Amino acid sequence: MALIQFTRNYRDLSTDAGFQFEFFCDRCGNGYQTEFQASAMGTATNILDAASNLFGGALGKAANVARGVRSAGWEKAHDNAFAEAVEEAKPHFHKCKRCGKWVDDDCWNNGRSLCKDCAPDMQEEMSSIQVQAAIRDAQEKADTVDYVSADQFKQTIVTTCPHCGAKASGGKFCQECGKPLAAEKFCKNCGAKMEAGAKFCAECGTKQ
Image (cartoon, rainbow, N blue to C red; front, side, top):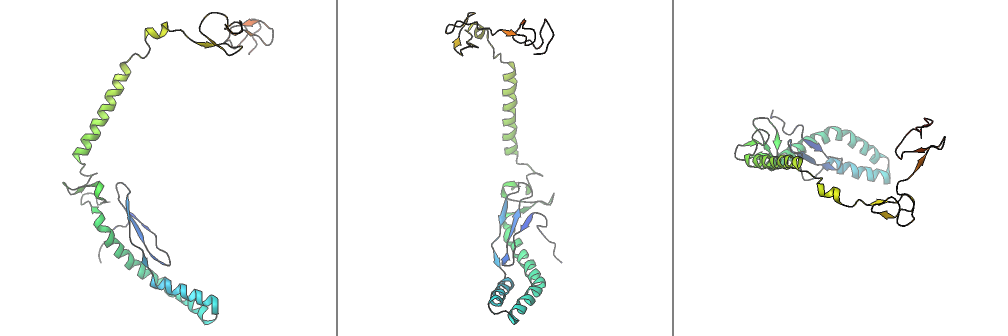
């Protein structure tokens, strides 16, 4: 008995109407879909079903018998269709003699007659290594750059007035509404004046 090929990397799309299969590359997952093969037995059963709906009686019994026969006949036809589908798909795949994987042209190293997992394409590997080296080099250079210069601290810092929302570029009071730019904060318990970022009152200890 011949060995069965493509035992794990395929999907059966067959129905009562016919047979069709998808085969996949074991490495990248790309696939090939075979031509649809109509099932003569499925067609005959559908005809009997349609006739039984019109006339009933003996034709209805015949449709039921056809379904019973199909369980064996359809399976045999299915096996034959799968064997034909394998032959149709094989030209689009290569079997690696080292690991046994079925791979497509993109995952096959023609020079080594092995899949690219077993025999990587050196040109592709070198290209990948160069890209990774360039990324590491860029990261190392980025780590040594001082992104905050002294000139930045000499620039005028623009803030927003907490009362009217106007832009302010220095000073203690807003040029639009005249109120202090530093918002004052008071304890909600005792009313004592507090620092803007304080979480507890320094006078009574109440959490704000």
